[in-house]
Length: 602
Image (cartoon, rainbow, N blue to C red; front, side, top):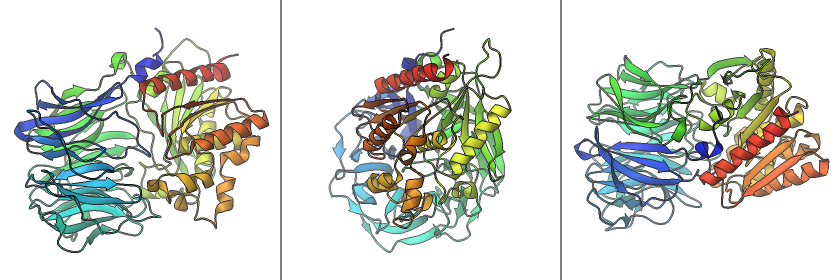
C-alpha cells in the first residue's frame, strides 16, 4: 500500500466552534481548502449553508488566538477579524460593530441587543460592549489590565465577568477572574477581583444559567480544574478533587473546555488524562455522572444536549451531540482518504530526567512492516513551550508513521497536562531543563528499542525548533538530522521583536533583562552554530510576527560558515504556522525527502 501523500494531509479540513441557536438549531464553522464557512442545521438534520463570506483561515500569531461565534436569536456574530453582526437565517447584510482590531470571544447579552467581545489592537487588549444594531460606538468596560479575555454576561444582563492579567505574567502564571456592573453600554461600578491573583492562574469564567453560582478554571490546588463559587466569588471550591487538568493554556480567547447544564445542576468538563481527552459530566456536588472518551473542544450544553468538536487519534474532528447517554455526529471534517485509516494510538511513557525527575511523553509505534531491528525514530517536539503533545487527531504524525517511523512526542518539564508544578518547573530554565529532558527521553527510547539509535531525527517548530537545535549543539551524535520550522534561534532578538502577547514571556522562562542577558545568549542556538554538525532543514515564513525571519537567516549563514549541511526555504506570505494547503504540502514533501536522504538512506 502506498504511503499517505503530502497532498492528502495538506487538504484535511476542520470543524470548529459549535453553538446552539434558537429552535434547537446548531451552528458551526467548517474549514476546507484553507477557506471557512458558517453552517447552520437542525440538531439532527441536514446542514444548511448560511454564509460563505468568511475570511481565509490562518494559524494566528501564537497558538489558537481569537475566534468564536456569539449566540444571538436568529443571527450569529462572526468569527475573528473585525466584530460584525452576522447575517440572519434568511440572508441580509452584515454590519461592522466595532473599530479595526482583532476581535474574539463574543458574548451576546441576554436581551439580545448588546454584544461583549475581546478587542485586541497594537497596544491594548480590552473587553468592549457594542449594540448589535450599530446605533452607538463600542464602549470599553475593562479597566487597565494588560490583557482581558472571555467576557460572560450575568443572566440578568447587568454585569460582565472576564479573565484578565498583567505582564510579565502569562495567563497560566497568575491571572484574575473579575466582575463589573454594566448599565446599557457603560460600566456602572468598579472592577471587582473574585478569584486568582499572584501565583494562581484562572480562566473561563461563566455564571450558571440561573445566576446562583459562578464557574471558572483555577489551579490553586496545583491542577487547573473547574471551580464553583457564589456570584461574588465567596464559597469557592473545586467541583472534582482531580489530578487531571480541565483546560489548556489560554493562548487566546474563546476556549470552552467546560460548560454548565441548562438547569445549572451539572457541568460538562473535558478532562486531560495523561494526554488523552475525556468528556466528564459531574454534578455541582462533585459526583461523576458519566463520561465518554475523546477530546472535546468548544463545549456548549443546550436543551438538545452537549455539543462539542470531538476527536481522537483514530477519529477526525466531528461536531457531536451527546444526549441521553449517547453521542451522535452532526458533521465531520473533510479528511479525504484518511478517514478510518489511522489505526495507531499512542501509549503514555515516562523516563527519568538527568536530575532524577519524572518526564512524560507519548510513543506512537511504527506501522508493522517487514524489517529487522528497531524502526527509525522521529522525535516530534511541541511548541510553546507552554503546550503539550496529546493523543489527538494528527494527520501529520500519521504521514510519518505510515513511512515506517516510530514517533516519540516528549512532554518535557514546562509542558502542560501534568499539573502546575510540572509546568512551572521550566521557570528560568528554558533551553536547559527541557533540552536535558528530551535528550534523556531519546536515550531511554533507544535503550528500550522503541527506535534505532543509529537512525534518530528530531523535528519541531517555534519553541520546539529551539529544543531540536540545542539538542544538536549539546548532544552530538544523538541525532542524524534535524528539521525545524520557524524556530527560535536568538532569544535576545525574540524578546525585542516578538508580538505583544509574548513580549514578557521570557522574563519568567529565562530571566528579566538586562540582568539575564548572558543566559539569553548561552541558550540561543545561533550562538552555538559552530557546534551543530547535524544536517538541518530550515523552513520559515517571511511574514512571521512571532519569530523574526531574520533569526532563520542568521542561523543559516552561521551554519554555512561552519560547513554544516543546511537546506533553507522561505515561504512568501506565510507567518507563524502554515496557512496555505500548498505550503503544508510542500513542507511535508521537503521534510520527508530530507529525512529519507539523511536518515533512511545509505
